[in-house]
Length: 229
Ligand code: 5RP
Image (tube, rainbow, N blue to C red; front, side, top):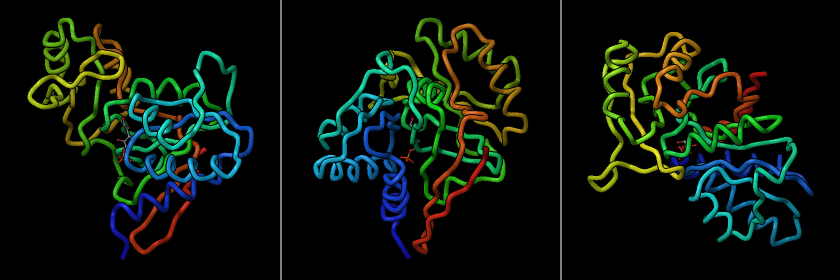
């Protein structure tokens, strides 16, 4: 049986074949994407010409270290592919993302790409979203009011300000993250719209109707491609 890291590595390596010569593509964030970056770095050193549109500062740093050229989203009219990780994937390809705090830029890049491919280990497959607390990115100013609005609306049962080293976690775009706990998210479209209706909310970690496929690694060494759209 493979270790969790080996499973992620298998998914990342499999996805590297989707990135073709001359391609600009969205490059996600997280420990599974890490392996994709390492593999693409090797291929760039062997002559593969690509440009990555990064989804976080962490990915900018890793891509630079691996020697992968970067592109600014504002300089690209269209691009065929974004590859990213996920925290939960339901059978319809609906996702929770943002465990690493990069959901806003990840969502902007995913929305701009023709196709979003998710890479993950089998633990991310769920029958229903919501066991993983939903990350919601908010403006720091008045975030306690936003927290109250969320709880008063009965949208979820608990809201926790994400912290790092005892201080509020600050996103790449200088916002806070509220991790919102549910029993389960029965109606993701409704929940997403309800959160986005609250002034002060920037974006939620619900990625709905965005993923085309998931490349999923298993402990027995298999890699499965699940098609959604
Ligand atoms: C970061 C994300 C990540 O893609 C998600 O948390 C999955 O990460 P990992 O591959 O490390 O499990 O959404 O904001």
